[in-house]
Image 1 (tube, rainbow, N blue to C red):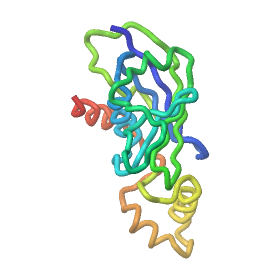
Image 2 (image 1 turned 60 degrees about the vertical axis):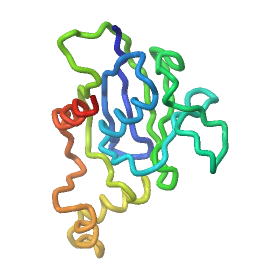
Image 3 (image 1 turned 90 degrees about the vertical axis):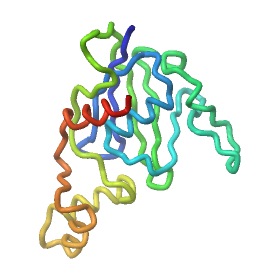
Length: 179
């Protein structure tokens, strides 16, 4: 079995929030969706779509007919290969756009459980914070105790939210449970 090493970066954030993960090359896009949600720290509370080339993959919805293809039937190595970059969009209202790049294809190590996160940086933004502009405002308020909304934003984000925090071991524990 071979694996892809994949780099995921949230657009429009500086400094960037990113993850590097390894997945089987034949992972179905529906499962990759769950892996991305887990690796980034999202709660899978909103709609999503993969945009690969001119095609869109996600969960087709009869109430909103469009050209979305069913992600549950498509394997990653059938639509992308080493060196390709594509988009994973999450929460169409907030507009979280992730650039996903397949950095490397290599043989799997039989002693390692895949998928796995090998590195990353910074905490995932909280759900429903208003996309990149809302997250930037949240960070500003949290960093300045004199900010007029500091206490309100701290209470909303939670006292333990640290935008600089990232723990790949924690992500891997959650990825292990996806099995």
